Length: 328
Image (cartoon, rainbow, N blue to C red):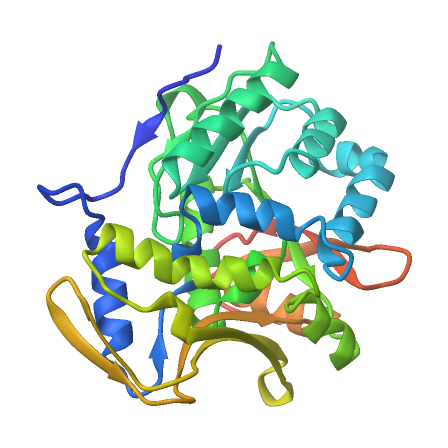
């Protein structure tokens, strides 16, 4: 049975504004290097644009990850086992999530996402594809600890975090998230996580600045969302999308670059930017096997198995919840 209404855990003020969204935007725009966390890309329009990004020729991660999911189902079934509650951190992909669910015969499916409308649409789609599978959507900020529905309390858990979303976070934040996942999922849990791999700079930059301009629209939509939800007056047309590889941090950075001097208000607060100044909107860290292992271990997950696509562009890693120890 599907819980079509789901659980809502987003903190809204009396005007219906997400308090965390407003706080992040106002504090981020007040910094010397203006920055807004990437999680706020995903209103309904942003979520749809990201689905469109996964289909552009330059964006290899989705195709590479899907290749792994299609080809390693027997190994997933052997190592994960049947009957687990699959807790997906982010609304289910219309392609990747069904491949995993088909491979492992889960006991329930719990998608967690901050974008309620997209979450409910994804949950309904999965319910239609798997009519006998209990589906319990939870609208929540999964970067924080989440209380799972009581209906899955007694089931062993498998966290599913595809798409290398972990790479959007600086290492400290990524470790914090992995530790929160460890607590949310509990002892005995497994985690299947996507992690993009280091590769040629030209391939990476093209993946985040496609010729059709879909990624640019995705980035600029963040400003449109701020205008709509936070009583803002940002001149969206004055900004341009930019993606750059920063080798020191092994990451692609996305920025919104002011093409001229701009002044605007957000929730009654005044901001100014000079031409060439940027709003840093996303990091996409890339990994090698050792850095992936180190990050997971710091987050209280022990790597069990790594899989890559045939061209070794992308990896899926299965990890087990680390048992607390009092000594090395």
